[in-house]
Image (cartoon, rainbow, N blue to C red; front, side, top):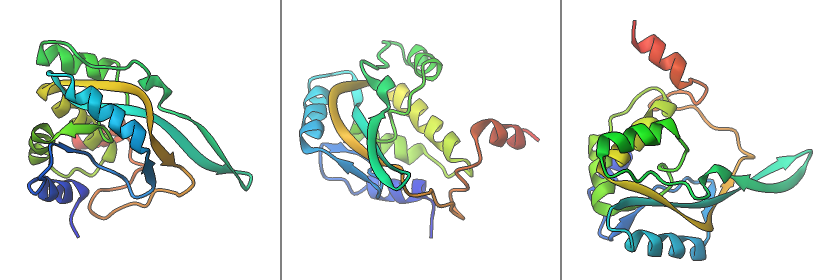
Length: 176
């Protein structure tokens, strides 16, 4: 009964492989896409994470369908040489790429050791992205590796808050 940030922080201290990633329980990954992303990440000295392309699945009027998900990740990268400029670039052109990217384990551990639980999951995502950009480059590969399910409704958490709480609302409330 702890937040997902606390669970991943705990797990990150126990990783024994060169690479790590977070995987949701309703997502699937394609081996060839994962292998392509690993190869891309291995060949990049300055990258700390690599994200592949995604396909979404949902049910519409009782019938399943697939669609390109995160199409904006095609040729997406955050690769400025200066950390501060990389953060600005990443936030200015923000895409949901870091939460499910493959990380070099040392970067993954550093990111999750610094994370703290917040009541807004969108804020947690942005914080994760900022830590990623501070540590190094985020790159993508052109292979599909992520199959994301959309037919199940998200479940709110006593520890992580409600997914319906958006960043702008949370931020304004936190300022009072």
